[in-house]
Length: 94
Image (cartoon, rainbow, N blue to C red; front, side, top):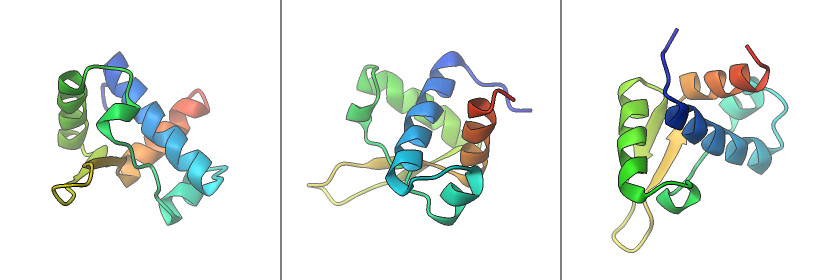
């Protein structure tokens, strides 16, 4: 079991909800097949420096992935397969 801080849980929930709504997912398998859990720093309700630290922690735990973009595009972050599974477990109250 991976220990998560409240901010990590919030960031996973934000990315998970984005992916769920984007593909109309009803379960983890839906999102694993079409992972659209992308978020940019402005999607999180925290200071961008704080978000970077939280996302960095999630990446180290294998729950999120960083996708650098071209200089004029915004960098993106998304849930890994493990992150998607944790999102759905939390959503189910597990």
